[in-house]
Amino acid sequence: GVIEHAPRAAGQMLLALDFYLGPTPEIVVLGDPASADTAAVLGALRRRFLPNKVVACRAPGDKAHQSPALEGLFAGKEPADEKPVLYVCENFACRAPVFGKQAAVEALKPLLAKSTNEAGR
Image (cartoon, rainbow, N blue to C red; front, side):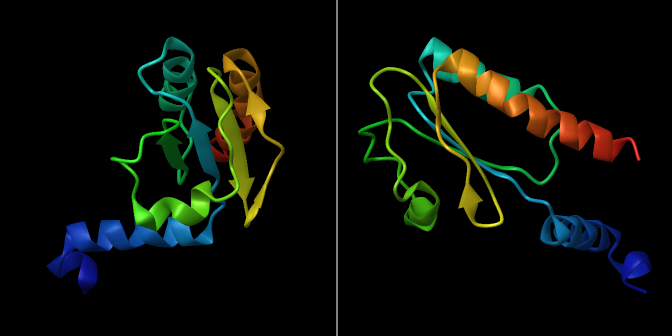
């Protein structure tokens, strides 16, 4: 009945269920999105199919654009000098941080390959 009366709501409900069932990787990028290296890391994420991901980016020292709702995600994560820092977290645990553009892009490859394999099933 829901699909007949509210097809858009039913589709959104299925998306929410998929998100809930997971996996839902949380990817934190610390670095200025205007810098070429950080932009390249964010671009690598945007060019790949990785459903249900949460991506949060914060520029060091940017107090004006900080959402209190994301404080838990950024807690304990420290930026590097000028390099982007990448944290990949799942199930409330984060892998060791990865520093620099090349290392961050390489660290994303297994996660992106995993989602491609699961999508092909």
